[in-house]
Length: 454
Image (cartoon, rainbow, N blue to C red; front, side, top):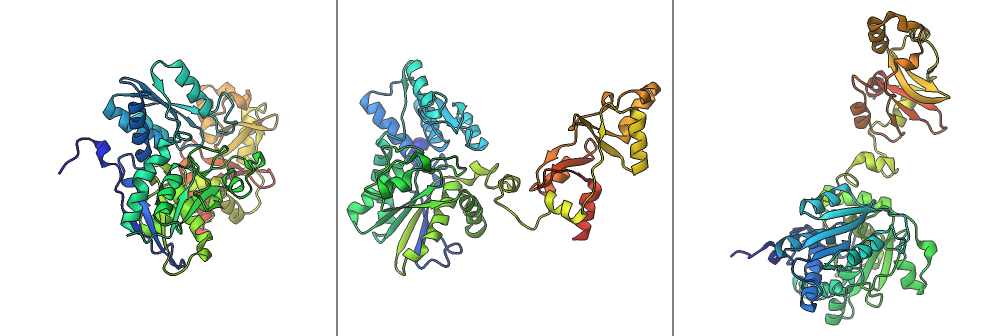
């Protein structure tokens, strides 16, 4: 047996039982692994559905251009379909999205325009507004509008819901889904409730999103809206695809819990998935007391972990946001092990020979150069020696004339791996501000001492 093209492989994704992460959950928990779709995400399902419905309605014509605001996964599904069907693609996305997602879209020949995250949807700079403007300006263009295009939820009503029902032999008691456009939870949830009205549909939301409060109060509260890191779920408006009548409960999950749980899914279950899966499992564990023996929970794992290598699977990224504090040496721990040490700097107006004498007296081999109190460069013994060999008279000149680029600045959470990569033959040290705003220097000697001290 073979398929006529890659689009025919969409769907029929496996259900996999979770074991270690859910050991304290009384219910049986199954993950629906949507990464087996050709675009490695559940969005392939609704992308092809939206395109085929638009073709039937005459909205998308041969040789047309598909224009969409997308965080990456919908764009991937649209781009793959466009390759097979002969369309062009222009996508707008936000600067919150991972570089891997954007690069993946471009790999399929799509044009990607990155827009600012922290603007209102109505702002002309938002990725919603830019995509709408491009649809008006580009001839023979069609905008799927995944948020309000009900082909999105229809795809999951026709495919995802029936698959889950059949795979669980109708025994599913709870469906748990991260909610972004709302298509997956609303479409699959509607189907499952039609088969069994007792099935509970739980949506995972994030802090900074409006869904939970709107569900519980009917109030669209703009004060709920603020920037968040979690990708793929939550919104600052109400998409038409979110059917609040189908969704029984929204559970909010913090950025930190979602990010760390994303890593734990790989480490404990061997399943490499994205940020929304981490949010979903974190939310499930928050809700575990609502579950009992005999319950059967299906959790949607939307997309693949490879799209988050620069974020959730990058320890320095996590440390910079205060999400990860492990036993690995960081700049902060190295400074604590070393103890207080006054950093020596010289003003750029000082002469080369005076600077050298300072270094000689203090027995140091490099020194930061300042200008009006700001670090603007550095000099090392080698810099001075090379300058004097080239022109002996330079010794009476200003040291700023021979200084080189300043030492790199790092923050207190920077890992030893990152520090070691920054310290090399061109940079003998790094600079860091302590909690009080005081400038500190970390040298290779300090790192070696911290390691040997254990």
